[in-house]
Image 1 (cartoon, rainbow, N blue to C red):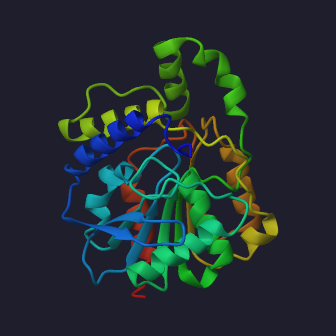
Image 2 (image 1 turned 120 degrees about the vertical axis):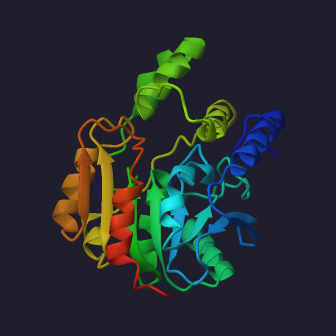
Length: 290
């Protein structure tokens, strides 16, 4: 059976070794959990006070829970964080990719919450993880206290980025770097030592993992209009994967309670958002003890 996630067994081994190395730099004490679910084992990193309000962290595609390393030290001061490796991505969860269009991912998250002993939580998601959070809130509104979304899929129009960059794929390392810059913005200068393992990991994932070439289901205005929970959406005006203006306009129209932060010069990757999200969580999630 072919691997749904990685290009080869060797590629998988490299990513998993680098992931393990990156997790050694997790900035606060953590517990690693392996939860049984109907889709197979799911890896979760838990940190923060055990009796604090729960927040599920859902990373995007071509990534894993290490992407939250710059953020968790702040959030874990007041919240119990559960960083979940999405199934079918480059983490330690099952390498299966059920269709996005059905309820398979919501049922999987049902199992995750049950395994964590939770009936309700706040969800924070980025990119495809934002879609996961939105899809779950649509199907299980009673289980979602609030939504903090960074460049979420599922609202704004999905751009046909792959066709645009196909010629760059023929240009070797330079082409791959150019694609990276289009998505994530110009490469930073010298990274802090504690962030280098994360950068090495993300570079390896880009080489080793199979990207999802799928149309992500979009929520309708009627579905967005049924959301009663607090919503924060942070989007970048230079996002090449999703139309951030469409995301902003649809939320303003259909979910007027949503707080929208539109960063004109922001890309699909928006660093340094931890304080803004912490403010939202403190205002909307601290009363949740479910």
